Length: 162
Image 1 (cartoon, one colour):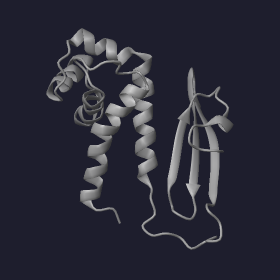
Image 2 (tube, rainbow, N blue to C red; image 1 turned 45 degrees about the vertical axis):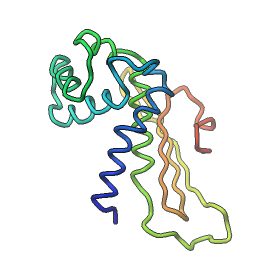
Image 3 (cartoon, rainbow, N blue to C red; image 1 turned 30 degrees about the vertical axis):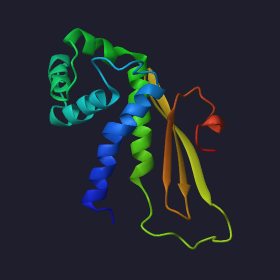
């Protein structure tokens, strides 16, 4: 069972170190200025939890509370960038990959280095859609989830062979 301390450490790591790393990797953050990956993630996630129906102006106020020194117009531009979607998607992937981990190692198929169940499905709504790839490690209990564009070939999923 996951302890509160372990949960706290995972959430803190995702909202700080992982957010900074993924901000640079997705090119959402190109140079450290008024906005950081960690600050943007905290604004959108924690601010969104506090006020799910917040206006952009209210979201900007959350950004300021998260330590971001950015104008309301600058914040609006950051939210509307394509790279902000890639950045938030990367954080979601990391979070989902940490979500399910077995409490103890499995002895099923112990002669093999790994036994995996994989699947890929499409989630489509009018005008928008996404593919979700899932891989479950039967021996270790680790669940990997990857989000990708509908047009992307699921055989080429990063970090996972479906």
